[in-house]
Length: 565
Ligand SMILES: *[C@@H]1O[C@H](CO)[C@@H](O)[C@H](O)[C@H]1NC(C)=O
Ligand SMILES: *[C@@H]1O[C@H](CO)[C@@H](O)[C@H](O)[C@H]1NC(C)=O
Ligand SMILES: *[C@@H]1O[C@H](CO)[C@@H](O)[C@H](O)[C@H]1NC(C)=O
Ligand SMILES: *[C@@H]1O[C@H](CO)[C@@H](O)[C@H](O)[C@H]1NC(C)=O
Image 1 (cartoon, rainbow, N blue to C red):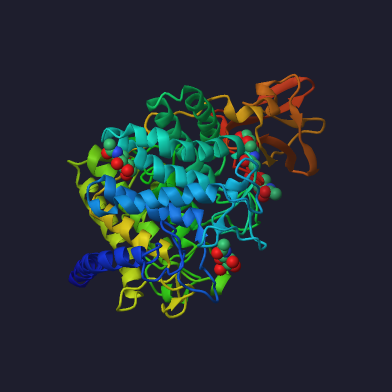
Image 2: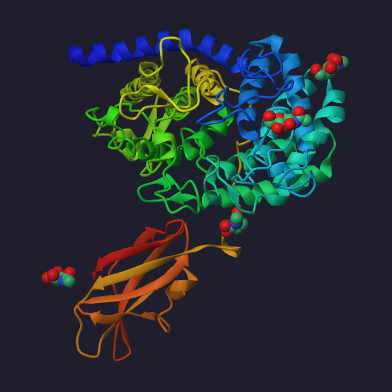
């Protein structure tokens, strides 16, 4: 016990020391990668963020809209929260650089024919014409979110004219692009899979909510209503990524992988809204779905990276993009491991703020990592369960920072990856996004939050999933002995199960008697109730109560094996 306690204190101490020394190094490392005066970004135009100074294996001397926007969101938060007032002119030069890039005709199109989906440019603001995974539709959304955060601050500061005159024209292009194109496929944030992607959908939803609210504030009412309509559709679509068993958000609808991916953890931290509580429709960091997803994601790396072998099953480990990753050796990424800690710190902020935490059947597995005797319920600050869970989760979160600390070289530099076998830095050196992620995790650990984006009080339209709804194939099997001439049928709560009809129920096949079987397509992500019935000489006999119940997945097939009751 004493040794255990010492270990916990050691994790906390390592983490505190690391955060204190790494934050200024990360800030300097990030600024070094921004033109034109950054020390490692020679040749980059003013306000242009290079992804990394690395020019070979891999060559990252480009500017990506995604990376740049996430980096500047970090700086804009620091500026608007009053933490670094020196950043103003750099932020203005970023806006100017992005305004220029928006107009550059590129392989995705012109500014009005899809060019805003182009993922990366040369650092002199010209188009990269080579083959690439394009378009990537998260870029315009992330860029809007960064610039709107600045715009909201300017309005509050009495500088609305700069917003309407300079920022809005840039924002409107991006927001219109998101509103008009969100329902088309995109390459994911790892630039590998062309389908629909959870991260992209989540950040698009956020951008349009913020865009609608800014548009309202400056009297752009037509845009505001267009963005709200599409945001409602996006929120609806966002729900479809949930896979109930074992409980995670499928990162991409295509790609043929497990679907368990840092994509979703990054989505949760980059759409965190401290005013939204533990809302699961927007996958807030403390929501039951996001916590279940986090556990599924973290556990997927325990048995694949050798630096994780031997670490107990409820302690922090190194995490990467996804378990099937082979890029540059498919190693852990600093920004992925930091993202786990950040989601947990964000969750702690909200539980502290609301003075309670709730364990649902969806999040039970996450919480039972810390105490197997926990049960479903709400625990308030006055309970010892709340206190001990908060402490255990803080230690768990600190553990992920400590893992990154362990594998950060002594000069504090952060590359893209660290070796799955010995933890040494790998792939692109001085990755700007790695530095940004070190800054945002430190801020979250210190309890800091950025401005709310309006995630509170949103509801998913009840009709939205039924119109164009995806279906899943469900195989029903029931073990039932019958008399000769007696048959088994299925009926249930949705129209595909005849809405509890007994005049036209679905006849099951007895080919594998005493197992009776049928396969039915049912709406995805839907709670279904059903019963088997027997019919003999026109006489109907129902299974005894209660109804059988289950929830369909987002896609694919499921099998149910029942015994007649
Ligand atoms: C921009 O940079 C690229 C890549 O280094 C180079 O090929 C191109 O000539 C440059 N264009 C201009 C206008 O400087
Ligand atoms: C508004 O902000 C812009 C951009 O930083 C700045 O150039 C301008 O001087 C500001 N105007 C006022 C009145 O503060
Ligand atoms: C478009 O939206 C519908 C309805 O939400 C959804 O079923 C479909 O998968 C979406 N397609 C893409 C590519 O986003
Ligand atoms: C069906 O149920 C009976 C009675 O419970 C059991 O003995 C039998 O093994 C079951 N058959 C199959 C194939 O599961």
